[in-house]
Length: 46
Image (tube, rainbow, N blue to C red; front, top):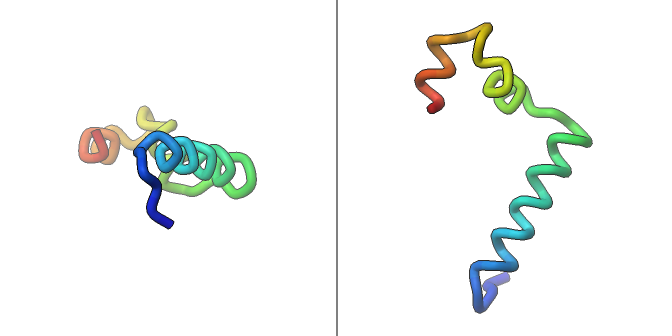
């Protein structure tokens, strides 16, 4: 599936990210949100 413009692709990606967060939250996303617990990991991610 190749789109002419990057807009639809970006929109789809954003929608999928939100879907994953709501349906099944990934441990990696949760870890990013709770960066205070893992300062060493937060610095590596950012």
